[in-house]
Length: 445
Image (cartoon, rainbow, N blue to C red; front, side, top):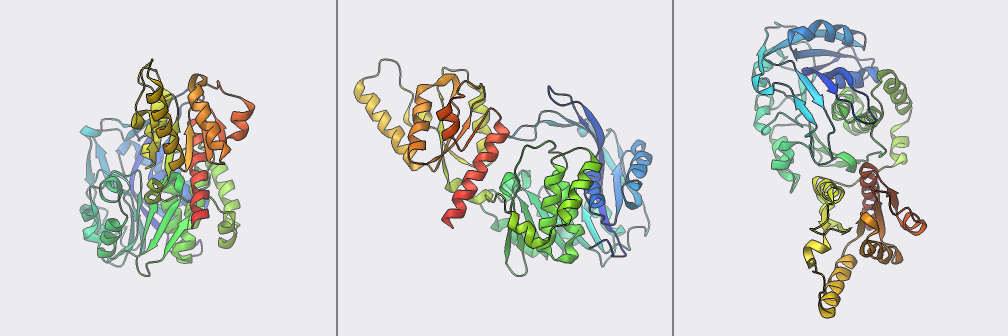
């Protein structure tokens, strides 16, 4: 769909209030969320859209006015939320999970789908974000000829929730952070593709966080790899919703270009929480052709390829040390499906006074493990000599070393100069690791 089309895209789902709690370097912020994130993406791209919203009654007038000011053609109150305010408290969400998000009174929440007559029946293209409402109760209000796309990253137990829409599906979209993906696709993408094909979907989009995305054409079996553009993330809330909405909004240009447009808009959204800045910067991206977007490149590291690369953890990973930074980093690496080799864990933790023979045997085992790995992720706490030696050995053979120095006790010329990346910020170090492995994958292909 382009801005010249007569009929807007209909976006269906919940509207919530996002409350970002204050942190040391971030002020608290209150804004409309849920499908409003998707709406901002469509508005920034001048793509016509309407909204069928599920929300508490107290939000209706405010949401209607806000969306009208941001390009919404029509607002239909589709469902009433009772028992809960639909407020999402966003704390310090980590790289390990979404535990930084708290849906207030979610166990008390109920939804009543309202009778909206034929107000939704004329839309040809519909994007649905499932939530705590009954999809089957929504289906009768949508046109028989509508093509529906679904972002099932959350609030979907399995693909059977789409059975009522079989034969009318455009895109099915999921993220690697989705519980459904963890259950059905973490080992192989094929079970999800099979489910999508059986439902008659045209394409399947797998969003793979920092590793980019893969767009599977279920009709031709072609796969388009869409890279991520990595930088320090200012905003992580609603980024995936923007991706989905913009992709569906541009699908008339072909699914491949639509996927690239969605990815670029999502990248811009991650860099600000100010709508006008988002719109301005998105316009710049829209001025580029598909070829120009491709030529810009980026990071591609599919979820299922990541375990092929062995990552050596160079760190004082000893049981007797207080090492929360190491545990946090290891949890983040595991969350992203990396294969982390921990020499202290695998080869043993030597007690003081160990014999020379034991020391040499353990040294040889650690060196062999280091040689087996493709990349070193170093966390040199307390200027640990063993960690620094491991880093030096890897640098000597031009093995990429990503150094995460959270206590900034190793700002040495050789450490900084020899590392592919040196930072006290885990987010920056993870980006560097993705980029290093993406380059390594590219060289191998």
